[in-house]
Structures are given as structure tokens and as C-alpha cells.
Amino acid sequence: MQQEQYIHIDTDNYKSYYKDRAMTILHRLDGPAFEYIDDGKVWWVDGKRHRLDGPAVEYADGYKAWYVDDKRHRLDGPAIEWADGSKAWYVDGEELTEKQFNALTAPTVELTLEDVAAKFGVDVNKVKIKK
Image 1 (cartoon, rainbow, N blue to C red):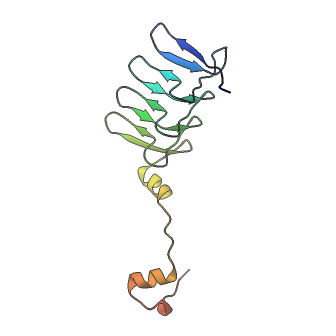
Image 2 (cartoon, rainbow, N blue to C red):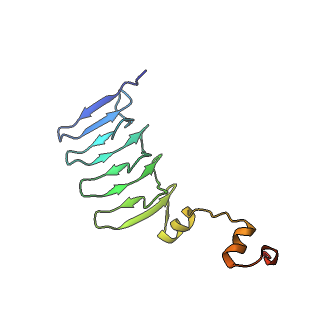
């Protein structure tokens, strides 16, 4: 069963989608819940900026921001991209430097003792791990 949706079109021609008749909770699952006349868009779910498959905020000037449950969040790049090329990194609402972000999201590499020995061209029996 599909949930009822309430749509408001303002006199300035922006459109907003709500999940409640009182029109207090912005909500839309199949697109942005707020659309500006200049093509800006904001995705809202249950009254929170939220989108998993792209930026939750997109403005016509090129500004983009990624949100999950109303927190700035992105694991595959900067969570904010400004039109001038500036960027900011956030994970679970916490701002990070690019270096901190890269350290946090860098893949873990698992190696066997044999892999390490082969990398350095030594016999595996000659490899010691220091603590």
C-alpha cells in the first residue's frame, strides 16, 4: 500500500512534499521532497535530509551536499562540494580533514606471512614480526 503524500506549491513556484496532512514533515521516497524554481533540489525522508544514492542537496550553482539521517555523511568522497571546487569531508556529521578522511576510509590490506616474505624476497622462515 502506498502512503499518502501531500504536495504544496508555493506562490514562488517551489514544490514541497510532505508525509502528513498538517504539512510539517518533509518526506518523499521517489525523488526530492523540496524542489526550487531554479532546479535546486533537497531530498528529505521523515523530516530529515537523507539520500543514499547521491547528494541530498543539489543547488543550481553546483553546490552539492551528502546527508544521511540529517547528518553530513559520505564515505566515497567529500560530503560537500562547492561550485568553486572547494570541498569538505564529513562522516556521521563529524568534519574531517582530507587526510583524516583518507586514513579512515582507506581499505584494510590483509597479508599472510608468505606475502610479506615474497614482497621482500626473503625466506618465510627468516621473517620475524616485532611488536
